[in-house]
Length: 130
Image 1: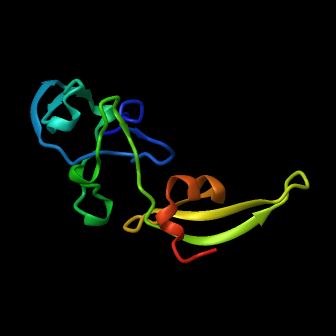
Image 2: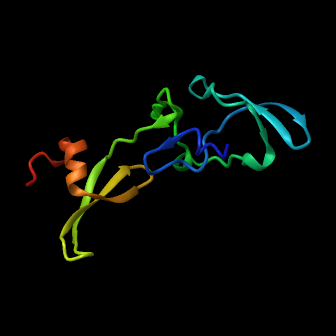
């Protein structure tokens, strides 16, 4: 199911698709009702075919719904898995320390973040490091 980015959006990384979900019935030639889990009960369960994709079995592409903790405001907070690299940038003469954060070990999703912000929010990643 595509097009849920506005409803289920983590801070930076959002899954392109959610699912797979069972098709309950075909309403019209281009409209289907799907079975949504309780965590997505705020979504309307009827989708146009342009929002759906045929599922081709590949476990590396599946993001389990149980792995996603959806908050009351329909946002998702990802926890970083590990820090992979350190780098210092000097865009305007002032040094900025950046770290490459791996957000999901299964997909290797990574972003460059400011080290001081990550130390404030996720200090457990830096235990034993200076």
